[in-house]
Amino acid sequence: DTGVSQDPRHKITKRGQNVTFRCDPISEHNRLYWYRQTLGQGPEFLTYFQNEAQLEKSRLLSDRFSAERPKGSFSTLEIQRTEQGDSAMYLCASSSRQGDNEKLFFGSGTQLSVL
Amino acid sequence: GEDVEQSLFLSVREGDSSVINCTYTDSSSTYLYWYKQEPGAGLQLLTYIFSNMDMKQDQRLTVLLNKKDKHLSLRIADTQTGDSAIYFCAELGGATNKLIFGTGTLLAVQP
Image (cartoon, rainbow over all chains, first blue to last red):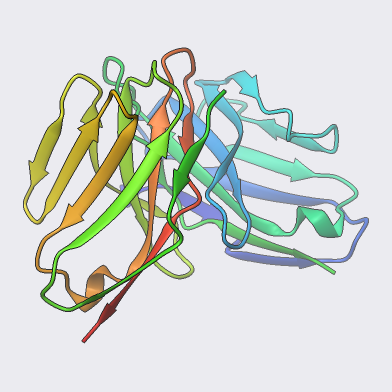
């Protein structure tokens, strides 16, 4: 296992189109996180799953965003009716919590550009 | 509320020590982390410290935690050009399961 993988690496789309990103976590990790990062900022939390259950969603996640993790393995993040403000790097991370320690391992991200 | 702040930029010469600082607001944070991000890449976990500790050393990295002042620092000894990157500190709040990240410090290492 080579770590967390995300697909695609880059996505360019026109405003109003729908896009979907995929994340494959480290296989033995039961938690999966989505973060968004814009230029010059740190990653901002969007949502996370424990197995297939979506346990928390940020208020940053508007109704146009939906995430799934149907079998508790890979996850998808869909953005409907994209807006220019959605342009960002979307990062996925997975973890296997050890006691209170939450060590996240990140993928390389999907860079979204909305024209 | 949760807020993590870092200085934006640090420039050092190769071979010198670098010290990157971070302040956080959540006094119930259980763990604090340092991540490194190189251009176009995701974040790489460097090290972490439990909130009951005040220091942790891992090879060239030393983490210092002042819990009273909610201040965290990362010292990199013998800084190399390969250490040039953005460094993020992050806190794991006591009542949350998510990491809150700072804005990042760009470390530039001059040869």
